[in-house]
Length: 429
Image (tube, rainbow, N blue to C red):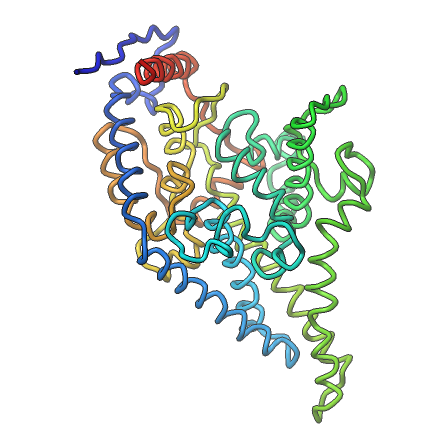
């Protein structure tokens, strides 16, 4: 039985801008059908090759950790700092990230370890071994896996850079005076912003489940930072709870307990003292954390910011035609194609593909990218791919207010949402 095609003629109140002209001839059904079919095929083809690829990335990440941590107490040097930084970044953004999304849920034989419902969750031991960073894994799963991925570039997206930097954007000073603040954010953003804001999203999710009302005057989308927590500008949790549950465990174990072996080793090595080796290891850890923040900022924050990225006014159904289109229009890819390049991008250089199908493996994104690019070209959908440093420039321009993101044409947004509803109705008949 042939399905009747969805027909809805747009009647925009204003002519389309040049960069939106493709919308006038956009084949909604064709694009949606091909993207959905590709995702199903990729998922069905996952298996041993994806697990082997994951093990390869774990080996690379752990190799950097071994070199970095075994040399941390001898001298403050670039190799040690780089190796520790790379381990911290790839352990989170490469390995934990894709595992927590469920990338290995249907293909890894050891689901006691690599299940999205267990990895890094439940106990301190799990967090320490699987996903030990400034963010609480449970909180990051809520903020990133749910809120960000299914509200991408909408007003309720907690990672919308343009919204999160509105105070900086509106600051009435020349742009060059804002750049030092951007550098500060780059060097500190995981602990200063991300750890506190993800915990806020976890608390909000708990409030919603309990049916609690959000206090009057509180805007859930407004970001929470460490500064907000310290100065009591945060109704969601106390400073004591934040330090005990989120910030403190990582700070204590990584920066205070971590260098202790070097103190004892220094007491037995000629030419060193315990205090000297402890302080050397601590210095390397602090500098590696700064570098890892910068590395993560470069590859994470820049994924959805720029004057060529779209914003949206309303929510859409997950995995609808509008959903698929938004993931492409509000995501930027970077240079890609080899495991080495992709490893140092933590496979975030496949941001378009990752947002289309968040629960696929890293290897699947490598395979998907050429096909997604071809589908987008076929249907005239803009597919953004640049060098990561060019994306950094575009992100900084958004942060300081030099440029702004594109708003998706309102009439076409409503049109596509109506088509989603019609397609859903056809599926249920």
